[in-house]
Amino acid sequence: MFPSRRKAAQLPWEDGRSRLMPSGLPRKCSVFHLFVACLLLGFLSLLWLQLSCSGDVARAAMGQGQETPGPSRACPPEPPREHWEEDESWGPHRLAVLVPFRERFEELLVFVPHMHRFLSKKKIQHHIYVLNQVDHFRFNRAALINVGFLESGNSTDYIAMHDVDLLPLNEELDYGFPEAGPFHVASPELHPLYHYKTYVGGILLLSKQHYQLCNGMSNRFWGWGREDDEFYRRIKGAGLQLFRPSGITTGYKTFHHLHDPAWRKRDQKRIAAQKQEQFKVDREGGLSTVKYRVDSRTALSVGGAPCTVLNILLDCDKAATPWCTFS
Ligand code: UDP
Ligand code: MN
Image (cartoon, rainbow, N blue to C red):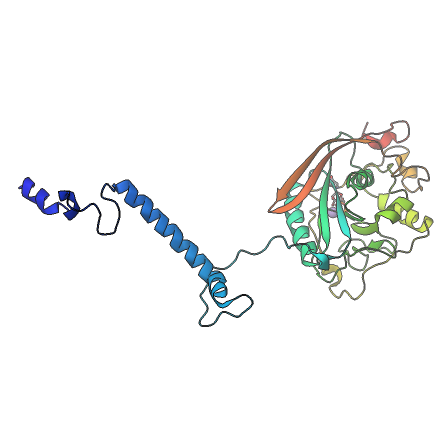
């Protein structure tokens, strides 16, 4: 039985007369060769499909610049663009987004992709710097912003001091170069929580030139609050005019404040002399006197959005500001 079945299965080229298979492949072709040939064919047809779908083949056949005639082929949907190409229409300015930071990881995961998408849509060239305070002193938002300014390099010409938990929702908000003077994006008419007239916290844009004119922010504010109020007085002292958004109709819904105060407790302790000192203007200190060390600098991508994390060790002069620690 077996010999006859074998004979019937014998292929024409096996008798030694023909050196070619019906497909034109060499006689000694093995299963492996057939497999490779199939792979090659598969690859070529995929390539054809891709080119004909994107219209390149048809365009090449018709000559450049002409419309492709006939019914268009359905292409697989393109993934959404996460990063827009920067070209001349983005303008000459570049923004350093300075984010004072400590232990707000969940907020950061939302903030970086949100801001990158928001600013890219508005064609604002930008880079996000996460200013991570890693020393064991109390949090110092203002000193971190000074460090961010000094470490942000020459490729940026203006800054946004930007809270990590404040997300702009209205695309009409201006994040452009603040030529005429500091521009307070999170104005008291729009911020969900702070509504006093001299408030300049949350999100504030300044040209680097104007920030230098103010000698940056005071380094004396350890713990929560008041550093922004002191900075308001520096702005006025430098003779600068403060600007705020106009024509925004979304009111207190302009931003999302990602802050549960029970979970993210504010450090409102006032220790000894800090009670009186917190309302004083610091005439000497600022950008020119901040003492720190950058422990590391890490390029990071959060959900496809780039940023740089600076691990910062601030220095505290305990004789000048003993309240930088709790004891
Ligand atoms: N911040 C931080 N870790 C802290 C305290 C403050 O990262 O422990 C940063 C963060 O960017 C935050 C900003 O400082 O958005 C302002 O602090 P907070 O949100 O507590 O103040 P609020 O404006 O809500 O009163
Ligand atoms: Mn907050």
